[in-house]
Length: 145
Image (cartoon, helix red, strand yellow):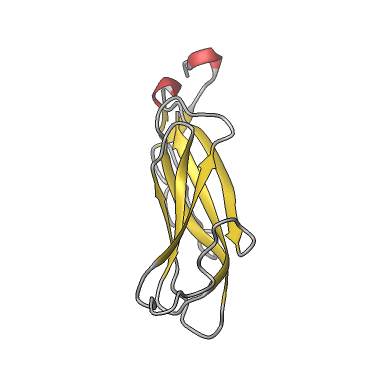
């Protein structure tokens, strides 16, 4: 094998790992081919964390329903800043990982990412109808270089 940048070797498997079924017979053949990957084509940097907000957060508007506005969606917006900026705009994915909702109505909640830059992004939590949200937790992952 040849060395990659800074003398590091990177190897990827070209076939799937062999699996065994009871009795020890292989379900698939074990990997036999390996391919050297040039590290310079995968200069990924990642950042991840958990976003938490709730009734004690400034501007939280998801726990009460304004009079006559049951059908109007309510959105809480917050800025997330990366601890170190990326060199170019990363791909950011967020998912709802926890919530505290009032039990009186159905759970209606969504999480979205927008305005991604090299230094951060905007995360929005939205609810609608009679759902009352007291707190949310969203996990996020940014991948870039």
